[in-house]
Image (cartoon, rainbow, N blue to C red; front, side, top):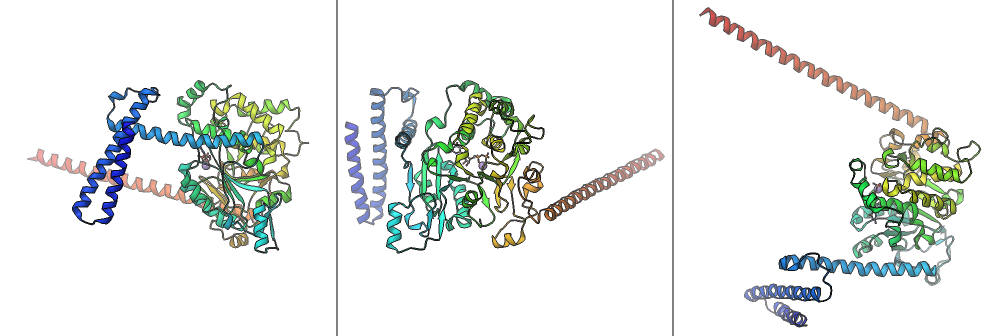
Amino acid sequence: VVAEKETAEVKEENEESKESNDNDNDNDTIEETKSNKELSDKYQEEAEIENYIEKVYNEDPDTFNEDISNLTDEEIAAQLKNIKEKQKNDELLNKQQQSISKISSQGDNVEGTLIDNEDRIRKDITPDNKPWSQYELERIININETNISYKRQNATLFTLCRNSELYSMLKTIHQVESRFNNKFGYDWVFLNDEPFSEEFINLTSNMISGKVRYGLIPREHWSYPDYIDEDKAKEVRESRKWASITYGTSESYRHMCRFNSMFFYKHPIMREYEYYWRIEPDVNFHCDIMEDPFKFLKNEGIKYGFTISMRELHNTIETLWETSKKYFNSLNKDYFSKEVDNLSEFISDDNGETYNLCHYWSNFEIASLSIYNNEIYEGYVNYLDKAGGFFYERWGDAPIHSIIFSLILRKDEIHLFQDISYEHTVGITCPLKDSFRQNAKCTCNPITDNWVLRSESSCNIKFIDIGGANKEPEYEEYMRKIQEEQIAKNRLREEQKQLRAETARRQAETRRKKAEERRKARLAKQTANKGV
Ligand code: GDP
Ligand code: MN
């Protein structure tokens, strides 16, 4: 109580000194005020510490894990600050968690934070499958907008990311908006295992033309199920083997992969939509998106779309194929039979004996949510989860999506988007049709910026070869150019190698000659000396 009172008094003093600071420009006074302020800050800090120590001893002796009599004031203050931040975070977390459980039990469709972006939403666009909201109706009536020219699908852009990725995310958003979404005004859903910061919400929603919604992932979707041995999982992560494997030692990466396999489509916000487009921070789009891919999926009956495919690191999924096979065998259907119309050839070169590691790269996905919300899919991921490979190995969501969809979807239900120029880390694609690149204001080079057609690790050529996608008219010509370029590159490399070898040979020759000269000179000297 005393401490509180002191704090209040110090506050008053503080206000007073501020006032005098405003009214008086005299230097001495400013100096005095400054030291006053420092002093009062110090008092306030001390008062808080006192207060805190009292609280710790009286109410909650477990808060500190060490004896605070050993700590300096600064250390106590630092701990105090941490604890306060944690409390603030916990409150926010609790609030968002509560809203989630409320929503899931009611089957309601509003939760998380919704930023409506009212003034920026395109007025001439309406969702196909969603009725106008009262607000939208009123606005249309008010502005007398009668010629609605475009119908959106019931679809959303979707991003799972961390607050720390804000600035990479903004760069991605800017491209998606200017190359696509400002024409359509689709919603954008952000999910996170921690509450999004105000800064994240403000800066991202400021750039997005549709409604933006920020949701928290429920704890059960980002934690260990009871059939997983956490100690064993920890041992795996700490073992020497995993140290050298990409993300091998990471715990959060495993939760992320499991979430993208088992839970993203179950989040109450995501349940409202029919289609999603997954977008990550740090990705680039090098051409305008010329048609609405959601509408394309709808019209063509496509369920899953991708741009890049590649081979997975085998050591991250050592038992995934065996486990998957057990599940698919239990369904009593031979997914590798010639009679079945699917893309089983994309994932296996020997009729299902082994997995060839090809997978659709899931950081880009445009797909229907219905392919997740069904018994076969859920049966599969639950089976995988019980087998433990999300934690005891490092199973990625990409091979999991790829294996099941290549088996259970029809060939024509999986689509390679060849008109979307997409780039993430090592992978990049660029459309081959010259006139398209011009219309779509592409900034990519079709020869050099086509990792999918150049790299041994890419599976796009395989996908095209087995009839998964049309060959663009320019395909053969570009493949020839790419190969010629590759040959020219190899030739240049060979020439450089020879040049280096030649230089080295010459240098060695020069050294040899010099050594020879020195030897001769030495001999001559010796002979001369003997002569004397
Ligand atoms: P990579 O593409 O396989 O290299 O993996 P990333 O590090 O890019 O992660 C994939 C996606 O999951 C990205 O959108 C990340 O922002 C997101 N992500 C990864 N780890 C976490 C995490 O711990 N929390 C949250 N909220 N998002 C994550
Ligand atoms: Mn990524």
